[in-house]
Image (cartoon, rainbow, N blue to C red; front, side):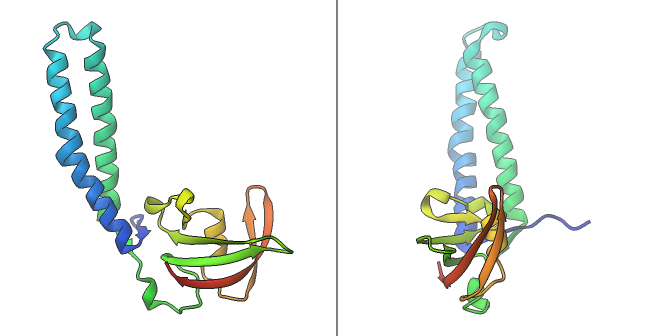
Length: 159
């Protein structure tokens, strides 16, 4: 069985590594300290501070595990090694919805880096899936939850 890989840019991997360091070196010790303080209040069965800190610790450890797994199975995509006109992870694409919508630009990144507000969409999103592998000038029909969307690819470049 093939392990799931996490495509991402080199920048995205560094961002995950920094997050992991912060989780382990800053947030974990803070929560451990809060648990120790809450324990000192006495009866744990009715200690909401203790319960809250333990729940936070559980969520933190889950995130640490997830980030470690993503880093371990990261597949760093070097968009410089692909055809300059081909849409791949790590490239910025500009397209317009046909027949006459305004152009939109997005950078396609791995799921771990996705941030739609800053124009970074996941390679797992319907729009990115529909665009990957296509080239400048092509008209593409993308299947999105609201139905089919026909777009024309205007440009592809480095992010």
